[in-house]
Image 1: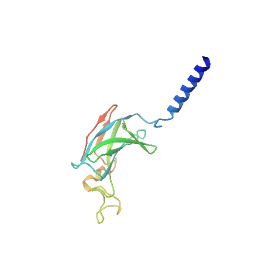
Image 2: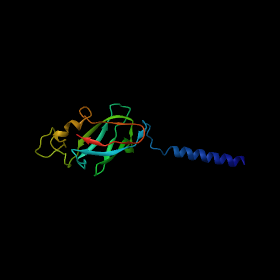
Image 3: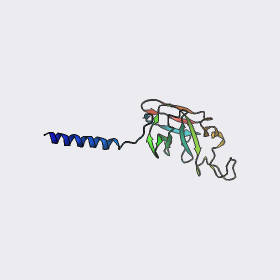
Image 4: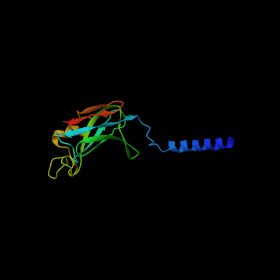
Length: 151
């Protein structure tokens, strides 16, 4: 009876140790679900822009927004090449980046600091960095559904 209990205990300990190694490995601040809808000049961003949230706290990772064609989004916080769903609690600035080939991209013959590099349209240029963006959101503990309208 004693050896059976020892074998069963050893098996359970081994299983728990193995399962503990199957986690994401993320050891940053707790992530909270963040979803909503984003519109830029009244339209979903489509393939024109990458949308990110910039944190001013180095201990709080800055998530990207995975935006669908209809403008609905989900926040993903990058870790080890993966996007974990959610964002840490705190305030963030909304930052845009023009994508090559999208409607907001640099067009040949247009004005931009680097030819061939996508540029934000003039009316959205302030949203190109955390220092100049005027759009801020706050993520709180628990589920967050935040609609973002730019400008």
